Every structure is written in structure tokens, then in C-alpha cells.
Image (tube, rainbow, N blue to C red):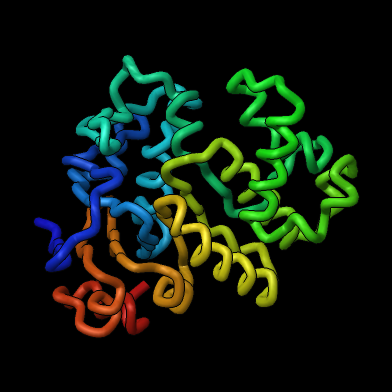
Length: 264
């Protein structure tokens, strides 16, 4: 079934693009010919019922699937402006993960200090200069709206922070390596409404520096935070377009049924 892709009249610059992407878990084909743009400094929401391939698609962008045996990709994900195919076997997945950071469903701070959590990716890259690390950690924590809350206790264990603070710490850790794209996999599903609101606000602020892909089961959240929305079903991209259009006047009945709660 061909996807319905509605591009804006004056599209923003492309940051990445999936091209005829298939993905297999062993013999099971989880993604079927997905082609989709990711625009620079915009938020793209991935919606659809559980098991439709949203998270699988998201994790292709930073090669998370490489960590497990028996999985394979067909097709391309091109990163612009240097036209790198992220799935090319010559491309180092560690470098991909520096350029494309990820924030998971549940906050996952390392059992280290707040400072060491944020500095982790920089140290993996080989940065040893303490002054540079301190500056970058401060910038990242400010970017995640956490600096004022933790600046006097950077040596404290990160696991002692509240759930919402831990998730903002994970966002700071993601920001510290100056990524070009951040992937959010249901980043607020484990948080209370107040913490959820602060993360959503944060997404709106950081998109001016980075492109964002977010998986969410919350239709209201997708409508609030995203500029573009993709509806996926059974491993296929059913419809892609500007968020207002997808929610107010979807082109496909399947999309409308899902958004209005008649399906899924």
C-alpha cells in the first residue's frame, strides 16, 4: 500500500531522509519500504498503534539495532548536508550515535555523578580538557533547563534526582555532544503531568538547535509538540504531513480512524 506523503509548499531544509527502508528481526520484516523526510530544526512525531514499527524505525537512525545479532537493514537513511548513508557498513555506528543522540522511555542515568553523566559522550570522543568539559556540561544542562537545580551538586549521584530531573539530565547528556538529531522514544510515558509539561516545553526550545524525531502514544502530545506527523501501521508509513493537516484533515481514512480513537 503506497504511503500518502504530503510535503509542505515551502519545505524546510532536509536534515535526513529514509529511502525505501526495510528492517528485519531475523526473518520477520518489521519495516516495509519506509520513505520519509526529516526536516532541519523541526519536530516530527511518529504515531500509530503498539507494534506498528515506530520505535524500530526510530532506532534505525542511530544504529541501535546493531547491538543485537540477526537484524538487518535494506534501503538507506541519508544524513544531510554531507549525504552520508547512516546504514552503510563503512560508517562507524559509534560516530552515528554522537551525531544522533537518543532519549529513552524511562530515564536511564548512569550510576555516576551528574557531571560525569553529561560529560560521558564527550569523554568517549576523547575530550580530556577539564575546562572544555566543564563548559560543555554547563551549556548542556542549561539547554535542558536543569542547570539552576543542580549547579551546586554536580558531584552528587544522578540517580538521586527526581524522575523528571533524571529525564532532563538524559536530555542534557544527549545535547552535550552537539548532535544534529535527537531521537525521543516516548520520553514522558514514565513521568507525571508536571514533569511531562516541562519536557514538552523543552522539546519546543531545543528544536531551534537540533532536529527531533519523537515516538509518542499520546495524540495530544503529538499535536502539541510536533511540526510534522507520520502515522505508521504494521511496519508501513501510512501518511506523513504537517501536523495540523494530519490531525484536522487527514488524507486517509485509516489515519482519521486512529486519531479519532475509532481504531487502536
